[in-house]
Image (cartoon, rainbow, N blue to C red; front, side, top):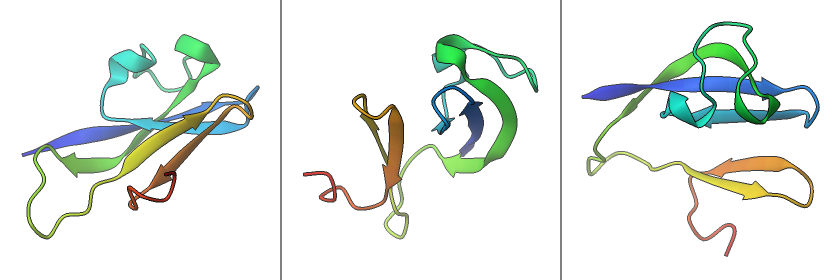
Length: 79
């Protein structure tokens, strides 16, 4: 089973935001601005709901001091 991965852009923060939960931003209408000033750009693709042995998890981090989201597959990269 898969779920959609949604892509948003914040012009003010110059930051992309990716999520499988559209309620975080509050819109899936192309071009519409949602929560925190992020505009919905569209569906990026799909992600598995459950992790299988061969799958690689993606971790999302937020650094408020520079207003940036960081995505990685290495859970130790941030510390």
